[in-house]
Length: 226
Image 1: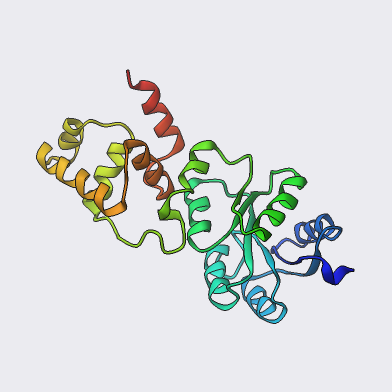
Image 2: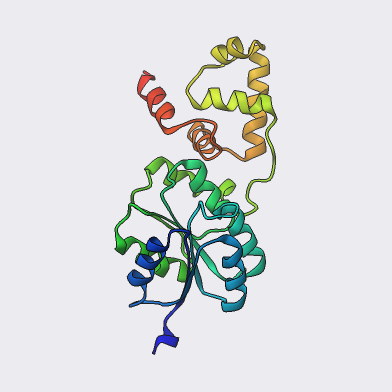
């Protein structure tokens, strides 16, 4: 009967955490093993071909994001779920950019992890309920999907984007950067075209995923607007 269960491989450099995940999952899934670093994970994944891989974002020797890229190259059919303490927008969006199908916070309920594994087996995305709405919305955009955002903004465009996302007017941005308002508008148009943005809210979500602004800043500016 165990062979009929979906297969899972667990990667976490804390043995107690890895063993806890094993015990949590083994009634519903066939846990193929636990590993403590990215190199061992890639080796075991190539050998065992698990359907789902649970991966910590800060696993050595590099990090979970670098490891996920290697996994997508070598075992593309395995579905990756990050299980981590990291909840910043940049981390969540990076996980999906490198090919993950799920993102579960370690602070989540145990039932959330089981739901996540079932969801990715259905080829669905899964994010922990504890991930804030702004972040949840932002990861649905093309720039967080593998290969979805390849154009790079110039440093000046990043500066303009950061100021726009916090609510600064064209005049304020021009004064801050010591450029003309016409130049600000030119950069704004270029940013929207290059990234494929459709609205100011898209701009804010993109800035969140790129680490150019923070949730606190976007909330504060939205509250200050009349």
